[in-house]
Length: 210
View 1: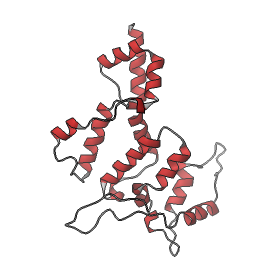
View 2: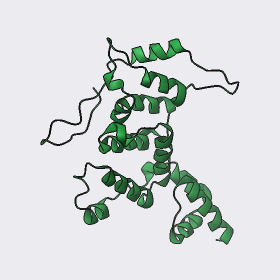
View 3: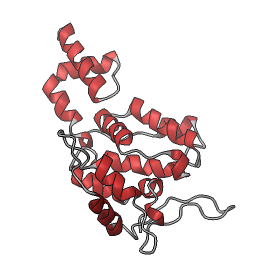
View 4: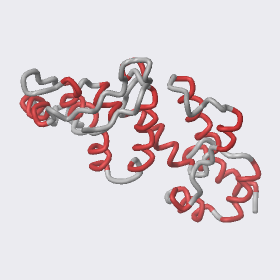
């Protein structure tokens, strides 16, 4: 294999993942560029994330409900995953379909959201939006958990149309109307989640779509 082969694979792994060590680049170059692309596009063909090291060196990791534990777990995944494109896509959707810890209160909700991005993020955008509309982190973040017949909250309906799907066309015109926002908000009333934060000292539990 030539240096150019390795350079091409290195560029691919930086764009479709988070880079790779020289040994991996050499192995992928020997396999071939096209074969590497096919492998990246089929994450299920690669072994799932091994958490043994994380469990060994962070023995309290699974019991951590705080933000730091979730950050450590995701960083570990991005560095060590055998499915780098899947992790890159999860990061991409996290930056586009935004939620935040300060509003969600319970970081593991965002961990569940990342799992959803890993599962459907490389497939149909329609399925992705369906998953997002039932995602506890998003339901909390855009207040749909408080939207009901007597007090409709438009946050989710507006963001869904304005930022996450239809948006503004190349001509500068909106692809949706205020009536569309109101009807979307009305359609999503009652889409809520179980409370993830029962009274202490009983701890926190994962929220689930109802």
